[in-house]
Amino acid sequence: MIDYEIKRIPAREAKEYIRENHYSRGVSNCPFPCYGLFSGVVLIGVCAFAVPCSEYVRSSVFGKEYKNRVIELHRLHILDCTPKNTESWFISRCLRLLKKDKPEIWAVISFSDLSEGHKGVVYKAANAYYVGVTTSRLFFVDLTGRLRHPRQCGKNIKLHEAAALGWKPQKRKGKNRFLWILPDNKRHRKELLKLSRYKIA
Image (cartoon, rainbow, N blue to C red):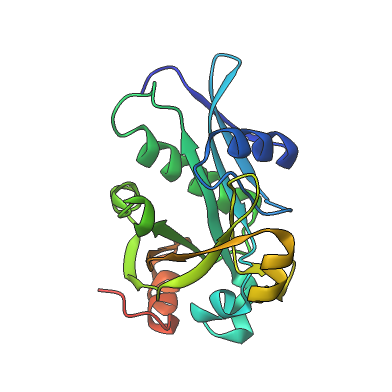
C-alpha cells in the first residue's frame, strides 16, 4: 500500500471528519476507539468503533450475558483519492489495533446501508462473516439534511416528537449485517462461533 500511516485519533477529530465526509453526516456521541488514515500529515480516512446504541444489537451476537464483548464498526470513510482495496486494507489493520486497545472485545458487528447502495463488499474483502439483513425501518431527516436514527440518547423517537423538531420521516431499506470474531486463539474462536446466535457458514 502507498505510504499511509494508521494511528488512533481523538473522538473529536474523528467526529469532525465524519460529519464533513460521511453520507450520514452523523456519528455516535462517544465513538471509541477511533483510527485515522494519514497521507503524510493529512487525514484521509476514519474508522470509528462505538458501543451499539441498541441493547438488542449488543445482545444479538452472544446473548445478554456477553453484550459487553461486542462493539460496532460504527463509521468508515476514506477519501476517493486512495487506490483500490484501501478500505479493506484499512479495516483489517484497524481490527488488529482494536484487539490490542480493547482485548476484552470478542466480536465486531457492522452494517452496510442498502438504501445508499452499499452492499458490504469491502467488509467481505476484510474477511467479515455475512450474517443476514435487518428489517426496513423508519428514520428521520433533520433540518440540516442529516439522517437521524429513530433511537436518540437511549430513547425511541415518536412521530409527533420528530415533527416537533422539524424532522421528516424517511423509510429506509434493511441493512446487510456483518460480523468479525476477533480472538486469534483457534480454540476460543471455535467456541465463539458456536456461541454466536447468528448462523455463520
